[in-house]
Length: 207
Length: 267
Image (cartoon, rainbow over all chains, first blue to last red; front, side):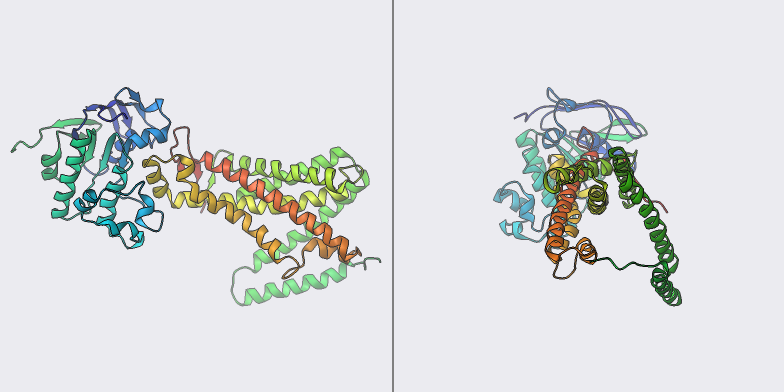
């Protein structure tokens, strides 16, 4: 296992972003914010190697280009803002039976595995997509607005569960977020996209 | 038994009825009488020309001419495969993959059937080789075109699904597996349906032709079975090869879905 490795971007350039370098130590959450269209999602796609890009990404001693692409993505897991479901039932998408406490933390019970995908709401899809991604045993996480479709109470619950798992497993995490309150609650560091660069922001000055 | 000769004025009678049909569609404003008439005209001209070519070819019976004819047929079929795809791979790949797949399957199966099974003397005798290759190419072309069209169009529509599966760490073959299966199915379905319906719903064209020409039905049936199998082999392997190569080309060396390699439909 390569768990508990630092995720490091080394002079990555994609779209309008150039020369992005940052290091996310194990168990830390780096939030990324910026106006829509500024390239947050594309940067995550570059880190997951889903788009041609410049620069290297490292997970500990492993270089992105040294692994077959699917092996890299299995380690550096991107959870998109809008998840896709291709089979009929929820259970067919999950690699293994999720733990009962994980299901409960997200507001489900074991019967969710038999649910038809067609009757899932967008909020349910979003929570199940997190469960599905974490079930793949990744070594790092890239979260693209993981609570965008959730109400406030559920957002807090999902946030708390995510942070607990992240600290426990020591995953380095890049978390795209809009909400300043959420950034203040979860982030160790906060990067704001400013033109073609990332600018470090103060995290939670009022905390 | 002799074939009853057909005079040109007898064909003109049939043509007149097609014109009548075009008149009906024009009256109903279906907007297809023009293309109907043009297609009918093309049939007359193309078949007339090929009749002349075949007569010359049969008279000469030279391997070089047969090969040239076969190559011309292959290239035209390759162009047709390309034209029938809504979103096709750019940079000559749509033509290249379609043509190569048809070449590998149709030519191999034709040569095998000629040399191993039918065994005319010489093996390239144009009376056997050209119609056989024509039937194989025609059907393989349909299968390959349907399969590639389905593949690229589904990949385009389901890009989000494919990419989400890639994000979950699936290899590209798995991420596009469902779409590949669907593409294979749509390429092979016409031939499976044709075999299932042969003789019950439809009398296959070649058999009908042979019977009209005076061949005993028993022998015509044997030839028809052989041709059906040969067509199925050609279509099957051609579709397999085209879908394998086409889906590979949708991804790059880093297993990224590269829909920028597809050319947008014109209009």
